[in-house]
Length: 209
Image (cartoon, rainbow, N blue to C red; front, side, top):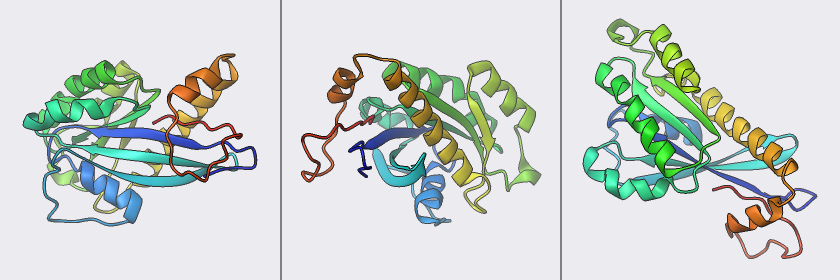
């Protein structure tokens, strides 16, 4: 993940939301193009890594899938640290999951300093049992200053678009902050993650994870 200038980019993104809204299947659809009808509830935290090209650079996102069950919240709260992006997911057929969005947002704000957040209404393939309108989702996103998109992990609708919009927004915001900060080298060194010992020590690395 090293370009000709020796720069490296690794961003941590967390997926949050109530249990069974489809977070794990969204992640597996994006990273492996897989969907599992019998997905079990996530225990604690799992993550997958995906790379995309932005401005001729390889940008790697480490996407964390957090358990939605209440009993795991104390465990997963530590994993918010270092996150610069977040996808808050609800199920368009279950209003309780939509009503929980504000609580998840507050938790995200408390435990991390995210620069890009998206509200995701998942399972849009279940139009016949929809319980939250597109307009409601858009209104909440606008109120909270979030990107908004409806997705379907089952048929892949908007899945890649949603993840990559967040990753590109992170890259844009982090790059702008670096350019505008005289002390960015100090800030970056504090967040550096060692991916491999092969990185030349004389090259500058940028990590946000």
